[in-house]
Image 1 (cartoon, rainbow, N blue to C red):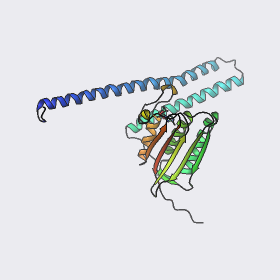
Image 2 (image 1 turned 30 degrees about the vertical axis):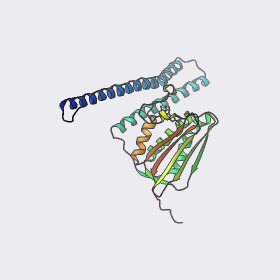
Image 3 (image 1 turned 90 degrees about the vertical axis):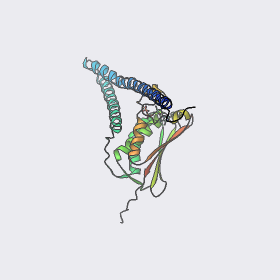
Image 4 (image 1 turned 135 degrees about the vertical axis):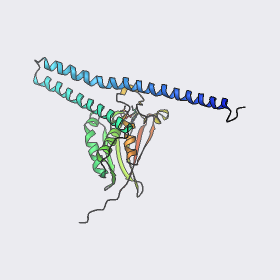
Length: 257
Ligand code: ADP
């Protein structure tokens, strides 16, 4: 039997801790390698298309319609690149605890309406119906742009993983005098129980072929936590996913007319 205080016991403990740390380092290096290869691919795809189209257009001889098509693709792919780079920069800011919030009173209904307007065209392409169910005058304190980024990311995922002709519901309701819940509900492909606990981990993706960086949910969760809120997920494979963001509720004095 091993007695605590016995050096053999302590060396044994130390060895197993070191082993555990070595495994963790190997595992996190593997995650980083996977991330670098997937991000390189994500960056290369739009760049290849931008380069291809600009070379084609520079060589000249195209009619206005073809030129318009090419310039349109260059502009869209540039937006995609900017989005990717911003996501990586946000992630790195959060890692270093350097994301600054510009706090103010946020009208959730207005924010959710703006979110849906931003994603409308993308949903339309899949004939997905976007529904808003929101109480009037429901306010939180926070950074409106950052909160919009969170809801955009959640609705964007919902659109990405939903079939054509389905519906996505964005709703907000008071839970108590101090809390509200904003929910994004889709009836898409869903997430298995085994994956559900991991999708909010940085870099994690159920299927790397879907594109993206695996950072969206990790960033969203951290932004919500900076607002003293919580991000919860519920899902059933083949049925759909529900993401709930709990945020502080603030009472706003209504102007008397
Ligand atoms: P990405 O930007 O790569 O989509 P996220 O962190 O936003 O990264 O999501 C991580 C993974 O979680 C996605 O790749 C996908 O596998 C899964 N996921 C996220 N939202 C949904 C959803 N609404 N329905 C099904 N799967 C989802």
